[in-house]
Amino acid sequence: MNKSMIALIAAATMLTACNNDKADDENGEKSVQTTDENQTQTGNEQQKQPTQTETQTSPKNEKWSSLPEYDKIIENIGNEDYTFNKETDNDGKRVFLIELNGEKQYKTVFVKNTNRLKIIKINGGGEIYNGIIK
Image 1: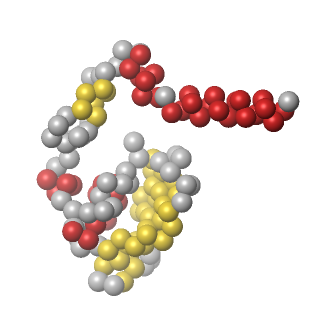
Image 2: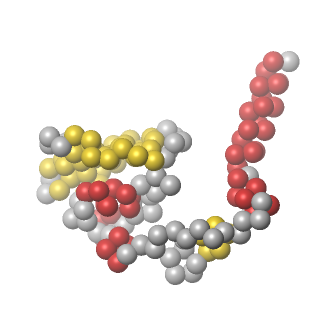
């Protein structure tokens, strides 16, 4: 009895979490997708349009540029020719070691379920960013 009740609650929670987009549409908010930037705008909210420097990525980092934390990382460390080395990528978090000219410069930790990003400068800088990405 308890196991079936827990399974029912877990299934209901998962289904509810997966239907967030539909709930927004039912509340009268419309999602509009622009063709140029492929960014979603909800209702009267307008998201920041990326500038030319934010959209340029190094050829080495093109495969990482689609990640949600990539723009915030580049915003904080600069757009130099960094090499992103994935250390961990599992269901809970993604960890990168970022190198410049073969030397480790930064470590990033992205917690997926809370969208929290931490950027740590390895050589004496300490934590330079700790926040939630929207």
